[in-house]
Length: 216
Image: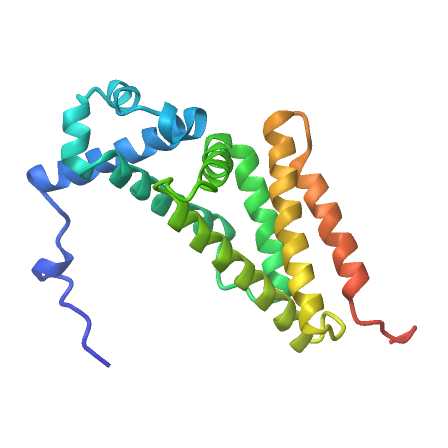
């Protein structure tokens, strides 16, 4: 095991001066760009819109991120970090379903983040969209996580045994349900996303749970 850096050493010092301000400015721009891209999409969410909201010029934004595409990737990476934090960790098998409930709750309180996800998912179906590769990888990774959820729940004794094709189907249905319910919430803010998803999870668990002898 490698030794931890000395807390008093240079590696642990907080950024100062212009460098610290540059980091803070990048975070500010990413936060604003999340809202802009979520509301207007990548094409409609211009650098001018982003720059005006943070009091910069489009050229200054480009200097921070290199290109509009670079800004989009920074936004999507931040989105991934935020959603992971909202779910908490570690999560395994059955616990991950509860973590997804936390994510639905987070989305109801951070609508702009959900708008960004749904907008980018729709736009990125085009192969020439700058977020296409990111979103494709994200969906693939999410499906893999959901397949593992069911395998772990079976291994831990929460769910009955399932064939691989059944696991694939359950993972696909879970992801499709989450996406569909989120879209309904965006179209109709009165829609109870948390309640609806929790009810779906309850039915899923009841359907797949291992039957136990009465009185046990």
